[in-house]
Length: 131
Image 1: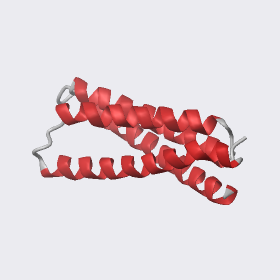
Image 2 (image 1 turned 135 degrees about the vertical axis):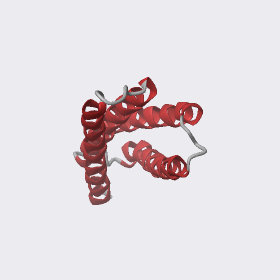
Image 3 (image 1 turned 90 degrees about the vertical axis):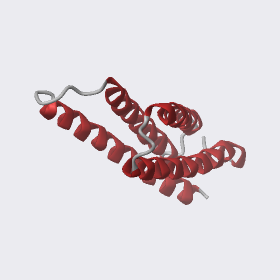
């Protein structure tokens, strides 16, 4: 069970790095386009939440890969940020656009997977895997 937990942790480390890279690209693009058109405040907040979520996914993956007891708190924090983002983004996003709808569907699927792993991580201390 330990090797599976470490593999899942490494997967989420890579996922967190990808989210941070996406947030960095968004900020660079906004900075480049700021002279042409002002950036929407909602988009800036969304990018900040993506960066925060990326850091929490990275931290939770690293804690799980290290089999640290901090993995429970990190996964719960990451789950909470993602849930709040999905709930608040539903009211803000332009869901009628096909690209937004596809992105939303992918986000919900990723959240469902993260929820399943969070449930697993919550059971790992009882199994003696996390220290």
